[in-house]
Structure formats: structure tokens, C-alpha cells
Image 1 (tube, rainbow, N blue to C red):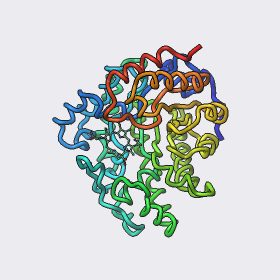
Image 2 (cartoon, rainbow, N blue to C red):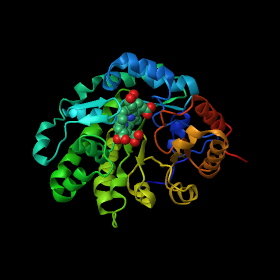
Image 3 (cartoon, rainbow, N blue to C red):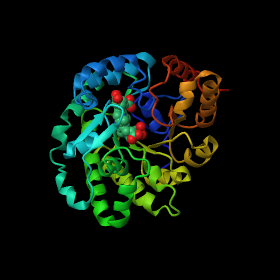
Image 4 (tube, rainbow, N blue to C red):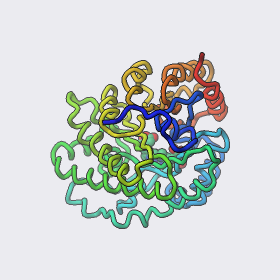
Length: 359
Ligand code: 1CP
């Protein structure tokens, strides 16, 4: 069980860490999911010079530069490591590439007999450039800015490993989970261990907060009992958070179980996360009444509204601020920023957030 928000117990004066420790700040701190990336011209020009996307992730000087780009432009309260959730399968020895216009491509893992292809013991060494990037970013960040490390949740990462790339229905991964439950559990257990190692290495390199992305938790959210969602999403994340808590007791974990609807209250009660990140479908009044008494919240402006800008952006931003800004709250998007987002809309959003909670 989570204890109620512990107001004011952060030993840090960084705004993001104060809120994750349960304090309400007005204006709230903010950062944006996928804040480094293709909507920034400086990212596109560096990306064009870097070779592949994975080369960019695994070259510390370039990954450091990309991590810092949005902070320079907009002064977010947090930097999120420039990397990807699929560096974990890469570190475990699975072939991973990113193809232009197609997204990630993995050599698919189709049943438990193939688990022997994966090895945890070489991961930290293979991913050493990622941890070096964390160190370099921390050294370069302005004092009030928090360094966030991240990983994908086991189910979300497993879905790419099994399907061989992005998927809409997760048919192959779901069939494996349903038909060879023990075998699929072994893959999830390996990913629990790998994720703890990967996040611990980021903390040892200087990450001050962590986010776990369960972007495809929605794959189990429509079942008529919560058993599968608990087994494949909640329980692996709970184990990761408990193991991290034992190793690094002062590092808050933000959990993002995307599009699970009212099941979010299970994650609030049982995951042990310091905070929950809300996708854009979550109703504000429900989140405020049901979730925020249990833990700080982050979210949840629809990325599409940030593309559109104008009065809708101002109105929706102020609504979020006036509902969720009454408690411990981090302003963010409900999912990653879209590549077609106009730069001036991001500046406008930053200014709106800095106006604080409407009187
Ligand atoms: O430049 C390019 O063309 C590559 C685009 C790109 C970028 C910028 C990918 C490919 N990954 C990233 C970086 C990234 N990915 C970050 C760090 C940057 C930041 O936040 O500023 C983070 C946190 C991620 C996390 C990530 N990768 C998630 C979870 C978050 C989410 O958006 O749901 C997922 C699902 C991925 C997989 C992934 N990486 C990239 C693609 C095209 C995909 C597939 C997405 C899909 O299946 O729809």
C-alpha cells in the first residue's frame, strides 16, 4: 500500500522532486513526454548527422546534447534521458533496429525455448554509453532541473520482443501469455530483473527520479476481470518498484500505465509508485477525487491539442491546472509530443503553466 502524500519531506529543493514527495507547488513543475525529438529543428539536424537512431542513443556526446535541447529552449523542470525503451532487449542480446518510416524492428522471440538467446549478464556493459550519457547530462543541467531516467514496463517491452515491432492488437504476445502462461511469465521475470538493473545503473549514474512506461497496458484493460492486467502489468511493475526501493530508497518512481481507465486506482493503491502519470482519456474530476488523495499525479494534456494551439490549448491547460493543480501535480502531456507540434505552441504552453492555477 502507498502511504498518503508526504508533504514537504523531500530533502531536495528541486520543484519536481518536491512534488513527487507530496508537496503542492503553484505553478506546478512541468516536462513533456518525448520532449527531445523530431518537433525540434536542432534535433532533426543532429539526427541527420548521427547515423541511425540507435547510434544517436549510444553516442554519449550526441545523446547528452539532444537531452539538453528542450531544456535550453523552454526551461522544463526535468530532463528525460534521450534513449529508448528498446535498449533493454538490445542489452539482453536481441537484434533491434529502427527503420525510417517503419519504427522498431526486432528479431522476434516466439516461445520460451528461445529465452536462452537472452543474457542479463552482459547488459550493463552493452548499455554503458547510456549510463555515461546520464552522468554527462547531470553534470550539465541547471541546478533546479531534475534528471529523469526511464525504462519500459515488462509487458510493453515484451510486446515488442515477441511481435517483432509495433503492434495494434498484440495477438502473438497475448496468445503466448494465454496459452503458455508459465513460459511467458519467465520472459516477464527476466524483464523485471533487467529493468531493475537498467534503472539502478541510471540512478548510480545520477538519475534522481525514474519513469516506467507501460504504454501498452491497455492490451489487458478490456478483460472483464483485472486478473491479466494485474499479472502482466501491475505485478511486474510493483516488483520492480519494490526492488528499486530496497536499493535506492530516496528515488521516486513515476508509473505510466496508459489507457487502463478506472483500473488506475489499482495502480495507485498497489504499485508502490511515488506518482502516476495519466493518459489524456482520464477525467480530471475523477482523478482529483479518487487518485490524488493517494499520490501525486502527472499529466494529461492531449498531444493533439498542443499541435492545434489557440484558444483550445489555453482553455484545456487552464482546466487541467485548476483541477489537478489543487494537489501535488506535475504538468505533462497525456502521451508523447507529436513531431508536427509547432515550436511556438510549446512556448505558449510553458507560459500558460507558469501563470499557475487560475484563481
Ligand atoms: O528520431 C527518430 O526518428 C526516432 C523517434 C524516436 C525517439 C525520439 C524513437 C523511436 N524513440 C525516441 C526517444 C524516446 N523513446 C524517449 C526519450 C526522449 C524524450 O522523452 O524526450 C523515450 C522516453 C521513449 C520511450 C518509448 N519508446 C516508448 C514509451 C513512451 C511512449 O511514447 O509510449 C515506446 C513505446 C517506444 C518505442 C518506440 N521508439 C521509437 C518508436 C518509433 C517506437 C514505437 C512506437 C510505437 O510502437 O507506436
